[in-house]
Structure formats: C-alpha cells, structure tokens
Image 1 (tube, rainbow, N blue to C red):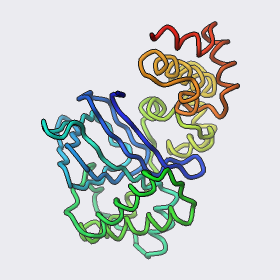
Image 2 (image 1 turned 90 degrees about the vertical axis):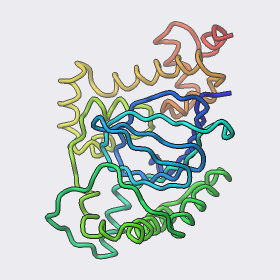
Image 3 (image 1 turned 45 degrees about the horizontal axis):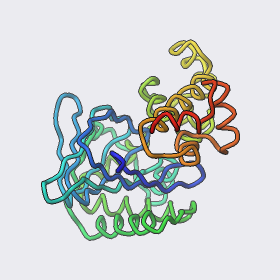
Length: 277
C-alpha cells in the first residue's frame, strides 16, 4: 500500500482538484502557489504555520491562502485507518474572472489570515461532493466548468464567512513567491517556464535571472534534473512503474523520459526498478 495516494484533476496543465489519502503520519512541507479550499472527509489535517498548529477535523472546511509556508501532516482515529481529504485549487486566472463578474471592489483592509476556518453550509458540502464525483469518475473539467465551480466556491465561502467579501480581491493580488520554496514545490508539474514565472509573481526575464542567481543553473536544466531524481526515488521507494512515474514528475511522454533517464543515470528506468525488489 502506498504511503499517500493522490488523484488529481487538471485543466490545460493546471491542477484544479485533488483527492489525498494518507496511510502514514508523515510530515511534509507545503507552499501552495494558489489559494486552496480543503474538505476533510476522514481523519484530520494538521498544519503548522508560523509555529502555530492549526487542525482541520473530519467534516470541516478551510481556505488556505496562497504562498502559505509550513508543515503538514494527517492523523486519524483507530477505527478510520487513514486520513482522506479533497482539495479544490482556486487558480488566480479563474478567481480573478469570477470576482470581476461578481463586482467585488478592492479595499484597503489588512490581508486575511493564512488559514481560514469555514463554518459548514450546504453550498460548501455540495461543491466538494461534486468535485469528488469528478475525481472518483476520473473525469476532466473544461475551462467553462472550472469557472463555474470557482463561482460556486466563491459563493459558498462568502456564505460561510460573509466578512471575507470585502477582501476577496486580496486573494488574487500578485505577489512574489519565495523562489526556492516555490520551485521545489512545483518543478514536477508539466507547465511552461512562462507559466511558472507568472505563478511566482515574476516576468520571465526576472524569473530566469533570479533562478540562476539562486541555483547557479538555468531553470530548464535544474528542473529536468530534479524531475529525474524524483523519478528515481519513486521507482526505488514505491510500487510505481516507469509508465506511472514519467507523468507524475512532469514528462510528456515515456520515450523522452526513458532517454533522459538513461543519459543522466546511465541505466534505464526499468533497470532501476529491478533494484527495488
């Protein structure tokens, strides 16, 4: 059994939603480039941010602000067997469009807290149940459906917490991410450098300059190496095969992945996989 099982829904190389089931209590770092709406189906989600522990219990909802850096671990009761939750990623592109349609005006209020508890309402439950239906059925969302679900999320969140209405614009404010945290949490996604730069709050030229200053390598070289290192770890430490791993680490096709892997490690992915047994 895998330590953690993650099933995702994408739209045009953007991650839109995910189901996460954890079978071990294993802390890991978080640094989301988008605002994320969580619903805990089983167990509880524990987030340590700024030396404070925040717990989201079974049946509860929470909104986590983008670029929130901290530690995350899941726990569960003896009779539950695992922790399970759904995440809906509020991509800035769609959130901005929905906020403009609704007509929310920017304010000078202080930014909202990094983790916002959301009292239960039927809109939140209905939204996350529908997201779960898409995940369970391995269905993809097109842009129009993502925008619709983002609108549903906005309405559900503001019904749960009406005090958030005046500061919704703040959620889409362009910010410069901490570059090291950002790229270490996002190198495995199959998105262009232009998109990565934008997600980090930088122009492409600034992204390239900052990246080289930080890692002493151009982005494409560092990212490729990190993907290959991650692929090797997954092959050795999990039951996943090369045909599963190449997509998970950001490669577009198996042949290109295999050639790159052989060139970097001197062995084929299948040969590395044999070492795991």
